[in-house]
Structure formats: C-alpha cells, structure tokens
Length: 236
Ligand SMILES: Nc1ncnc2c1ncn2[C@@H]1O[C@H](COP(=O)(O)OP(=O)(O)OP(=O)(O)O)[C@@H](O)[C@H]1O
Ligand SMILES: C[C@H](N)[C@H](N)CCCCCC(=O)O
Ligand SMILES: [Mg+2]
Image 1 (cartoon, rainbow, N blue to C red):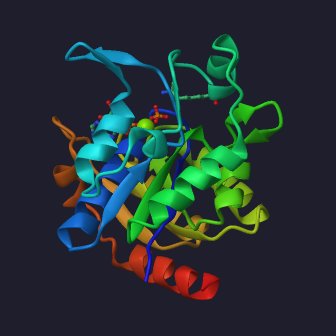
Image 2: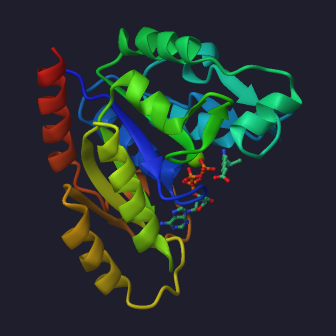
C-alpha cells in the first residue's frame, strides 16, 4: 500500500516544507520508505560552497530513501520567483512529462512520495500549465497547508474549492502559525475546521526553531494516512 500525496499551501512561505518534512519524518519513523519531491524549486542559495535549494535539502533530510537529485527535483531554478518566470530567465521549458516520469520513478522506490508544490495551488509553471495541472497529472490526493495569518480563511477556502474542482481529493489540512501575533487564532482554526470539510491533522504553533521532528509532534497523521490508503486502494 502506498501513501503518495501532493502538498499545496495557501501561499508561498506558509509552512509547506515544514509540514512536508514533518510528514516524511513521521512516515520514515513508522518504518515506511519515504521520499520528498520538489518538482520545481525556484531560488538557489550557496550552502557550504554548493548551489542548492533549501526545500530540496530539507525534504531530503527528512526522508529515508536515497534517490538522485534529478528525480527529487527535476527543475532547479536560480531565481526566487514564480517558476515560469525563473525558467524563462534561464531559457528552460518546464515540461509535464518530465515531471511525471520523475515522480513515477521515485514512486517505484518508495512507499510514500511527498510532492511539495511551488507556492500556492495555481502558481504558473509554464505557459500552458500550473501547479494544479501538475497535481492533476500526478493524480495525487492533496494535503493543504494553511499558513495561519490574517487572510488565510479566504485563501484556504478558495484553494479547497480549486482542488475539488479538479476532481482531486482534499485528503487533509494542517495549519502552521506563521504569524505568532495572529488575533483570534483558535476561532480561525475552528472556522477552517467547520468550512474545509476535510480531515484536520493539527496546527504547528509558532516554533522558535522549526524543524521536522518538532513540527511532527503537533500533527496527528492518522486521518491523512487512512485517506491516502483509501485513495491508493481506489487507484489500484
Ligand atoms: N510554525 C512555524 N513556526 C515558526 N516558523 C515557521 C512555522 N511555519 C513556517 N515557518 C517558517 O516560515 C518560513 C516559510 O516556511 P516554509 O519554507 O515551510 O514555507 P513554504 O510554504 O514551503 O514556502 P515555499 O513556497 O517557498 O516553498 C520558513 O522559514 C519556516 O521555518
Ligand atoms: C520563490 C518561492 N520561494 C517559491 N518557490 C515560488 C513562489 C511563487 C509565487 C508566485 C505567485 O503566486 O505570485
Ligand atoms: Mg517550501
């Protein structure tokens, strides 16, 4: 049984990598072969003398499957901007078949491939397709990460609507407190629980030193796992 999923968020910088890493950490700790994939990463940094992307590093550190970078991140782009623009600057064309075959190759070696999208659900990846098209092409259940700050209710509800409009399953949602001073935090969480009609995995509070293990302690992944198991059974 496989537990592959696509992680999207209410925006860029909302906690997708943190929560994807927590998910990978927990899946690996439970004995599964778990690997993270960042199909398109925009924004290279020099770390220990090497040009790399922080999301790609964090996902790799949280999983337990050794796989080539070309599969874990088929498109590694320099500029920290929308992928379609970063790719255009480098005269690269992001192609859906290449993303799909990298995902399929990873899925052969893992029980769980956690695919982290770029930014929010409809961020353009090329002239003719976006993140939602990618999730649809991979046919994956979606985990929505809500970055808890003022404005997130609208973003979360619109994203849930877009996911379902694509015929995709919203397998669960999790919050991450990105604004430690958010007013009425609990009432906002309650509002999302009422209106998203999807399994609630928990909220990661604002952490002084956010990391995969620390975030995982705040999440209950059982409702997600049972949704992913039933999605896999349907697909089989
Ligand atoms: N609960 C939290 N507590 C403290 N810091 C957090 C929390 N959630 C996210 N952050 C921080 O906010 C920043 C953005 O989070 P993260 O990188 O996970 O976002 P993202 O949605 O993956 O962004 P991108 O669209 O760039 O992939 C990071 O520095 C992360 O450590
Ligand atoms: C560079 C950043 N960290 C992400 N990888 C890309 C975010 C693109 C957002 C585009 C947009 O919605 O305007
Ligand atoms: Mg990220």
